[in-house]
Length: 319
Image 1 (cartoon, rainbow, N blue to C red):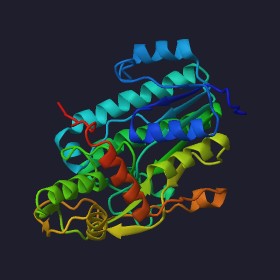
Image 2: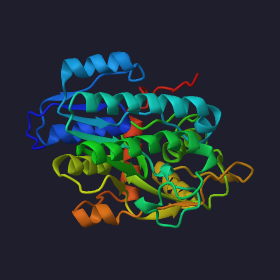
Image 3: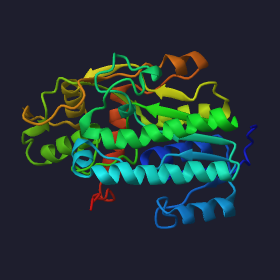
Image 4: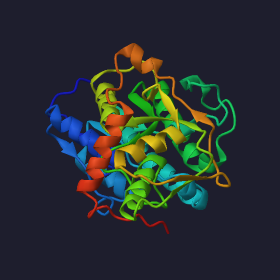
């Protein structure tokens, strides 16, 4: 389909870290017919409510940035919710899009869809070739069903439904709750609070040896923009920097940025998760998209945002 600045674009999850970044990127490019609903306004787990919303709004494009997300602890403690709620959200959005003739759908997932011990870097074709990482398999299985649903729609109906699988994202509007957040924002908060407490030691999970790749969320939004404004020939694309560092190096970089002067203690009795998770981003590079923000710069921007919004950062409670 040919987009113009008046095309109606629905961003599911527009208040989240990724969704809000996509919204900002769209506004910056002059798109002026954006639709977003809070979870109170529209419960994406409610099939009837979602169907009625689509019947009423009739969006031209849907960007699915809505999900229940969390780190190792949250995934481990709430497996049923991570599986079922994510499937409900995406199934309702995908099916209602098909039923209402939405021509373009961008589904956002996670690098955890790939097998735990897949060769590195992770290529798109490694999907479903081995077992998943047990600590987040529930979320991963849900996201895999979304990827395969979009692939099936491309195959059966010829619609431009594409899945983008980002690496570990961070940035503005991240979740800094220590029980449910991912590693990078959790570290920012831990080091910040330890700095305020006379630079007390910071205890971190695992050995520090696993390697992780990170992408600043505004770069992810630009990848979504690229997928929006171009018709991509494949159903699945990895999105990342193509570079990774150890968790120990990440901790030291954040410690330096925050200005914490204390000790880092590694609790090796806690799980490390996947040993390495680096994305092969050659497919995106081949069609003309690459990341722009280096990790140190992105951490500085994120910490600056954290400091400016520290009074408004809410604790996320899981029930």
